[in-house]
Length: 251
Image 1 (cartoon, rainbow, N blue to C red):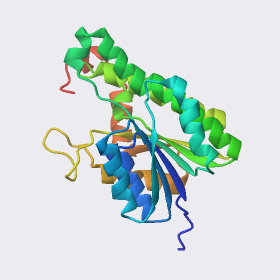
Image 2: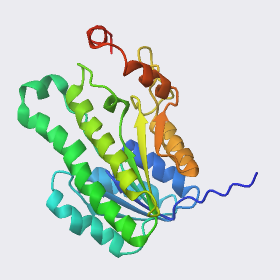
Image 3: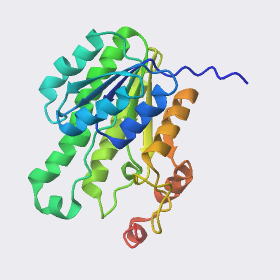
């Protein structure tokens, strides 16, 4: 069967040093993508990331971007779209936080929530509006399996991802029929540099495995992608575990 999937020609990665973001960019460059914008805080790591993608043959530029500065998002991200059409936006930024510390430091907890949720709402709406104005494109939002149910071990991070996940689903509904495709990606733990999970992490993936799932989701015009796919039925069951029992589970 002929492969009719056409990878995006232009890509904007919000979170330009994200391992998943860069793995996805590498995979798409190998297919068709020729223009990449990496948005993130200026740093040697961001510069190095851009250089690594240029070495693959793409035209790459970095864009100053701070999730915690929503007032700047319209100008910074709008400027990318002013340069020309963007076929795909990958919202890949986020911070895990430190649950033990953040529980006793409200300012630190707010920083996690502000980055993962408030900053993503702002950036997501700016990009969604620009995609709708141009009449086409995909917005891929990196959520997490942690969004499905709050756990004692990481409920601050999980709650921020739950908010992001709900926002992205609603945004996808709002943009249905406009030519803009919104896809929510829910990976389990992501561990760089090795395949699969170690003992106690049976559902872990590498950035490359998540990137593969993202490309497959784009092919199908999927609205939700689980990585690995087995997490979908697993989490459907976990959602219905009674809270007294869930508290005792080693999760």
